[in-house]
Image 1 (tube, rainbow, N blue to C red):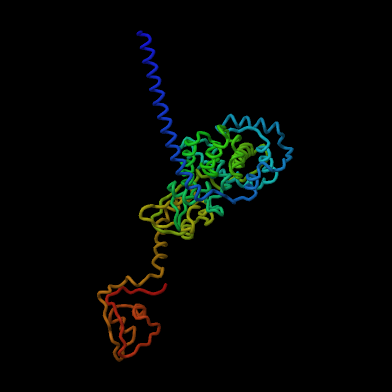
Image 2: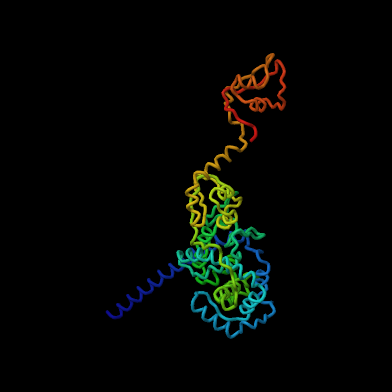
Length: 426
């Protein structure tokens, strides 16, 4: 009886433990569903579509219909062996299939110039990506996602409004905390947009628990991936559900894997990129205290204007604005930092002179409570009246809406005494 009672008690404990576990799993599923709904609502409003590189997009969208490409320098057996080796190094599912082979060979054969340009840019951008991906404990291979998205062009914008290296739509960028205004678009800032992409990719992986599916969701939205999973009736492997995904997304992961292979094996295919003039590690940032233009910076510290544009792509008008709440940064080559420190005050003085030289509105330069009406007397002229009341001639003309210097005896003139002398033009 004691043994039976003990067995029954243990059974009840197991049932309770199992019930608690089921409840926890149910709560987790509900939380994930809320996250998916939140993310998917944004994608429904602005379905991702990119036309940045038509040739690349043609490959992605026509992955299944492309005619097989003959590329003698890459035998199929060699490709299989390299893909298998790559598969052991990454959490992504890299398996040989004719679609992936065709994408790789198509790029190697007909897009060598584009590949070399992107690999050249990767020397600058990849260290930025890898540092952030490591901070978020994400696979470093996700850096190749920016290649598919933007070709590593931070200022690029699709016809649907997706912008920057990671191609964030406006609302998605705002949701991820990026500043977007008339002067600044942090979707084009390599560091800040990468942080935002890491956060978003983390949330997608938390939802799907699979990196291939997370990539598919990044492209077409989590809602479309969930629908594909339902239609696949229990199948969860990307290659098994891809026929249920939107056409572009069906080719999206293969394109990502194709670029991963090409970048990792560039030397075997005689791709000869040019290294950039400097690497990201050779640059640093400094906070700017007031509104300055790239032209003023270029002149003050002797740096090429195009270098400033390349290093600071988030400034849409080539102007660093002044903000009470946020001090904006300027990225410079380390070797130029000494010049900046040396000429910083001179730079701000140049900016101040430019601001002072701007045409000022005169409507708030005088006190309307001290309004005075003066009637022109014989022998009066505008400069004499202006001198008498210590104002400018242009003030008197503006206050009375007169364009000529001629005045008549008895004419009523509105005057605001003790007003600062201001000019109506530069």
